[in-house]
Image (tube, rainbow, N blue to C red):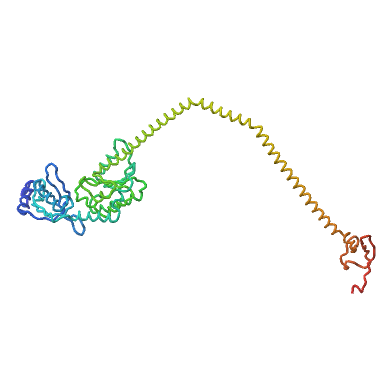
Length: 445
């Protein structure tokens, strides 16, 4: 068994130097490589172009390979205009490219693919092509500009925030928002979501659905994410996620990448800003604008009120100087009216009395006529009643030759009421005759 002193050991620089020598000897030439560009960045000072090359699984769309790349300034000054002229496409992230590279390993910076040539015929990559297809589909669906058309709240204070709770960008956003110099009150509510990787789409959509269930409690939705490689933002180029954002019922403000990054979510959102802190600054600026408008309105109201008070004061002063003359004129007009009325009063009174007397005379005449007519009607009615009573009287009937037979003062109406020996009285019109009843057996048979 070897002891610790028997083991061959290397310093880190010795090992990385060995790796450097091995790679130099193993990859001495240049190689044409198919890849997709990501996180393209041009150093404005040196002119060097730094980027990443990625490769994705065709079925799962997951990154299966990634390598750091560089195009040195001298080479980039030739390749960039050539590529853009041939393809009509700016050299940027998301391009499918065929590049000629040399493999280099640096003891400090690690593995890098240095680009020495590019084939412009190998044009747009899958990311850009997919983005264009998604954008065209959203436009065809008629939803691409829906969120932009929503009215933005004047006071965006109740904020639903979609981000990772551990993201540094979230902390920067809260610090900027809640510690604003004007002291505006904001009420952010975090809806946690995964902001990179394959779960981003479903996680952000789930957060949107949770917000939608309580949408009356919020003014605006903020989707923020800190910086990072462009390849980490690919999940925000999802059709399903973009469609949800475009059709969301509240305005969406995004700050999910650096200024040079522009995802489809940015395109469909109501307002796109470059960073989380820029989103916070935007919301504070909205409050500043509302506060300015309120100040202007207050000043306008104050100025208008003061001007109106001055006008009314001048009017009252003018009225005060004219009031005695106005009162005197009004009194004179009223005195003239009273005098005229007094002059007309006797004739008006006489005419009124005459009209009243005429009405009384006419009413008296109508009452007299009505009473006379009623008396005539009542006299005629009494005459008819007297005649009827007279004709119904027994004396009237007896005078016509009829008689009445009575027993003990009661009228006999049937022979069956009489018994032999009954004392009967027969009444005539001119007297009475007493008799005794005898029943003839022959008559009873």
